Length: 217
Length: 214
Image (cartoon, rainbow over all chains, first blue to last red; front, side, top):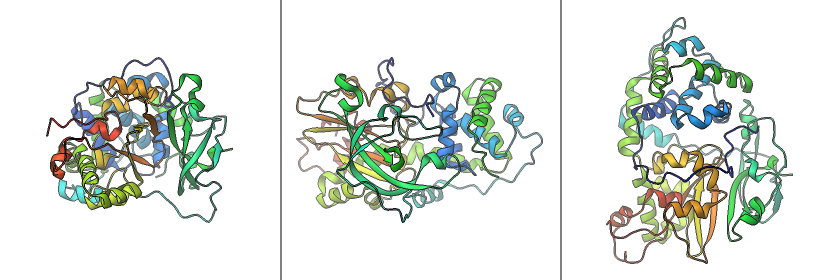
């Protein structure tokens, strides 16, 4: 879908705020939103469905609310959609009719650090499908938007690039965002900047993208 | 319980919530926390531990240590460039979003820069929380289209023979840029070297590391 999140190459933005203080969080509520996203575990969701829910924010809201507020709003939408509490309860900020549960046992820092280390996940999945492309091949991306979540940015549609690595098969986000498990071969593709942006680009420069097989013609 | 995977339903819920919730983000987050605790999905202690982990324990110092070792130990450097996911396990730095990690080295003729134009993908367990500018529209929009202008805003001046490669990390792969070791650091220890590796250098918005700070 051509939703607002696809910002690559959009013009009209001002300078990057390079003088931001180097701290992990700028407000306590940001740290809390991060912790809620991690500790809550987002049960019943896939990462791609969660990303798609972010993308379905109203465009004006998407561009104006702070980053971690987007996470918070999307988590609320996700829990409501999945049935953990109601819209009315979200607005009230407390459960009203949904039965309360017993919180899980709390985890201290050392145990959390160890769990996190063990949680590292390689997303590659086995497949019997042979890869259609090899390193060095030229590929052309599809020219039009698809009606679902996708990870082919608009600026790279209908463009020719070269495969520089192959990563085996990975879940296709377009399907995973619909709750379907379909694996496809994933490649890193390099595009000349001039192929993407025309004469305004510096001919020395390139952009790489990690793209699934069905993103190619 | 299962998600509906109904895109339009999610959009309608977003519109309704945004117009009915209290406007302050802190209150919105408080509502989410109260609901998850009451529902029995999270414990307050675990939330506190997550905050502590990413405030006190995990940050760009981890990535800096990996880069420093890659400067001193050529075998480690080869392992890092071959398979960064495995290489950072030698430090115990694996975790959030580092399951498909790729390390990319800057050279005399190539400068690498990382962005996520579609959201804000970042190797959290290696570099900690991402900077606000990394998540902001200006960086996400401009880094792929005018990387040299963006680099200039960060104070990075590139010589004539340097090509810029922008890594738009929109799939499962996450990237670590390995900056070049600056001259004048001969004989330095891993700890000393790690001190001069900046967070921005590992994203690519810094290039020539300063040796004065160590």
